[in-house]
Length: 227
Length: 227
DNA sequence: TCGTGTTTGTTGAACATTCATTCAAAATGG
DNA sequence: CCATTTTGAATGAATGTTCAACAAACACGA
Image (cartoon, rainbow over all chains, first blue to last red; front, side, top):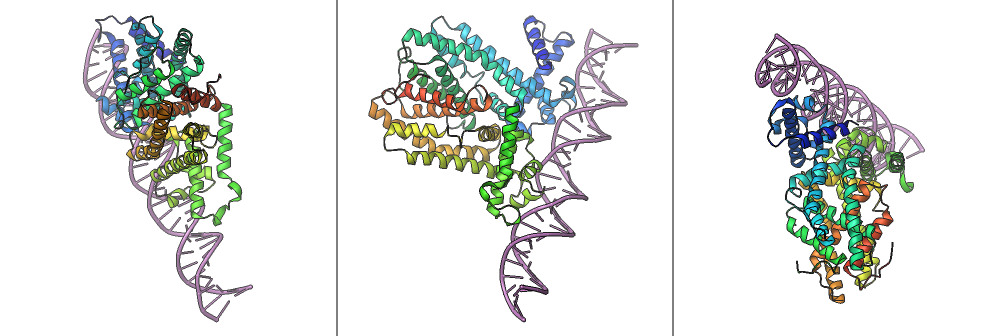
């Protein structure tokens, strides 16, 4: 309930905000400060992990005083929920944008969808670590689980539809749903690998592995090239 | 939710009870008690998550007093490291065992390796949740990162070698290393999905998705079948 | 078998620390 | 001058660790 209200507010503010008025009015200031604290929270999650992220560290990271977080967010729990919500919205907007820019060809759209996951803006150590921190706590916190799942719901639909198109167009002997699940799992798994051993594998190599898999599934649409 | 809680409770009860007629109370050997506490730790991680796992909860879960953990393990940190180590060793022994039982055929060995990941003994909610809890903290704790990575090192080697055999035998236009990375990522991603939305997908369906992916990579070795 | 001293394992309360939260007071801006 | 925002110290709760006391197993001589 409350999370939804916050979500609506964020969306409304973002949508209604003119390109000019950044710091005019109390509301804009308030939203700016909230974003600043959310960014500091992501920093802290990435630097210290979930269990060692403290209100004091977030406040320090934002260069503000200790009590400020409880003023803008009611509690630590709500700050973290807002942070996860922010990341989920950013992720969702990102792949939707990538899909919007792609042409009508299913193969190109699929490549765009997969490529979006490896964009610098989304796929960097800071964000991946924060995501993984939330995943680690998701099982025991229904709110996190719902937020992680909600954004993927639409993603799963879009990907399944694309796979179905590809299968029909190319005459592949594949099950669309299972193929979509496998692709999604591979993408998440590659994120996990990038997170757990950033030195071992680069973003580009992970993207290459993802493209290799796409080629394996849809050889008639994607050209095979050496890694 | 309710089912999950019940499942967790059952698991906890199992761990706290004398498993397989092992001796409890005073006569329990040092190693037995350590294992008992490690199991209670996995229970607590699965039930409450990493950040809310406390020494008191572990001790209660094991049916022992508060100070006992600091006697057998020096500190909370060392208890958690020992727990992760225990899980890593169990995982390693499991896939090595599966590989040992498989015949000499590369395809059968590959199927066995992949199938091991979806065995009940390894792939259950309790263990997956505990793994994910550690993953969430791994980035900010080098010790965890090393322990997570160490077990996968050998796995990666074995899988890459198998892929190379398959590629040569079947004349596939694939890069062994990249294929291995993609397969590993898919398996980990499927684990993650099972963890994050256990109600949405079953262990069997995840295994099917993995087999679908194997078939896509090596169509001449694995028969294509629906479902 | 018994008695006795020693080692080992266990308990639970006390302690110190960390941390989220509260709030009165101060600062800021319209 | 009023409403809003920010500060920072105080507060109280939670939690990891320590430790003195206690109990069980053990060793060993009689």
